[in-house]
Image 1 (cartoon, helix red, strand yellow):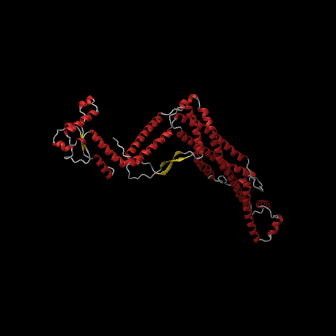
Image 2: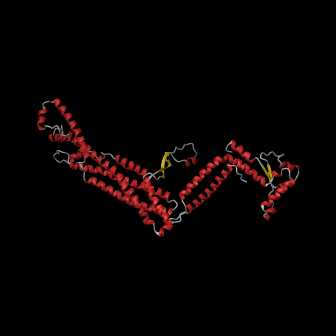
Image 3: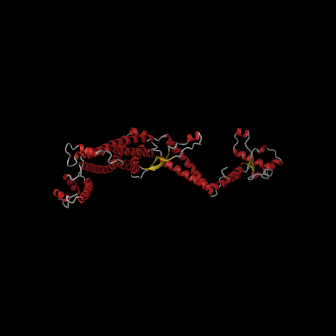
Length: 494
């Protein structure tokens, strides 16, 4: 028994006895003592009954006649306690015991019945009524499917997904082989089901596969040996300025690093929306497997076409970025001047140090250049290159390489920022907006034909059986609720 209290209740219910076939007993003092309970101490009493014999069973004697014969028998043979014998009295006693026990369990029973009713009502609500008009059902389902996709993008329609959860505990070596086989290894993880929406999943893709992936690309990945690259383009005579061709060639190689991450972000967005289509179709059209299969196939084909268009558009965008290296970009000029100012400031500090060591050199310096008060840091740097005031060609080459690296990194970051902003817009235009404006008409055009409607809008046998079983169980639960209510107000079950 589950507990001591349950044991005591169980004993109270079963502490009674029934003697059958009393008509075969001898009518003497011993049988009288047994039936009236004086020789056998039974808490709930002892009740005698007469069963139908073989002849009555063969002749199919009605139960009413058997009960009447039973009552006459006890009145004739045991008149002192005949009112406590017989099938009718046994029925009354059993009902009283049952009602007494049920009253103790009424709160628990009422709660369980309410929970089960809510469960089966939810099932019937999800299954819906059996379709009577296939045309109307088809239109409603397709409209609900496309609306659910739009709501899922906005976060108003959620579905269940399974994700890896926490790692399971490692298996102990002391466990038996059979037990170890039943437990997952340390490397495996527990799967967790949670609710999400297509909009939330897309946001994660934008953050993880777009922003984070592009930000993880090192801006100086291919910027090695810049000094040798610059020197290799100068020829016999060193150039006065850094050639523009060097900058353009190097930045194009840097921009090529965006091709694969950008395509990967589009692919992940495509995969995310495809999974949402599967989940939403399964939830909206679970009653109609054929229709669900056709809708998913058409939607994914349309999504695949949009994915190709999005990748082509993004590839064209990157080609546009590579076609014209805009060194006149406001942000690039600003950073260029900042970098030049740093070099100019470094040169001025060196010049001040040189003047302290040799004060007579200032006159020679001023004969070549008299800077104006409004001269920019960039102009100062270029002037110093023209005057050849560097200590050596090696020092100048190092400065040029360092300046080139900073400029390449700055321009790379400008294009990356534009790309991080552009990819989500491309996804929203080619996937989300196209799905919301074109998918509904495409589904109706492809599926809404007389030849296909009757076959597609046909429930599976499993759904039909499930609806009937839930409806039947709900009726039973309603009857049980009425019965519990009757017991609670003290009505008889007899």
